[in-house]
Image: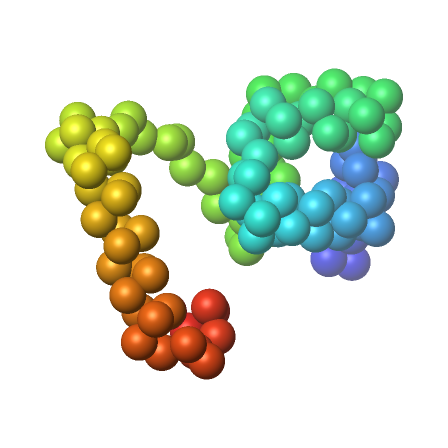
Amino acid sequence: MHKKVANENKQILSSPEEKTLVDWIGYQAAIAKPLDREEIRSLVLDITGIFPGLNWIYWFKQRHPEICASQPGNLDPKRAQNFNVTNIAHFYKLLKDIYDTYPNIPPEHI
């Protein structure tokens, strides 16, 4: 018997629950709202009524390598300075010029 199958009864989530959680994590990442470790553990609490330990997320990620977690970095001050009214107005002027020059181009191709 494979080790993964043998220890499945010790896991907090069943295989279908884990698959659903992996799908939900992927969906949230696809809509640009990635979940952090605590949010994932909170979802497990909602699903099972059991709050997983701190190491649970490590083993969960081992079973599902398609999930990756990262720590968000701070905004670089140079990027923050460039996000100003003048630059934003210039961007939208360029965008309007493109739309005026190529009126039939689909927005997803810009």
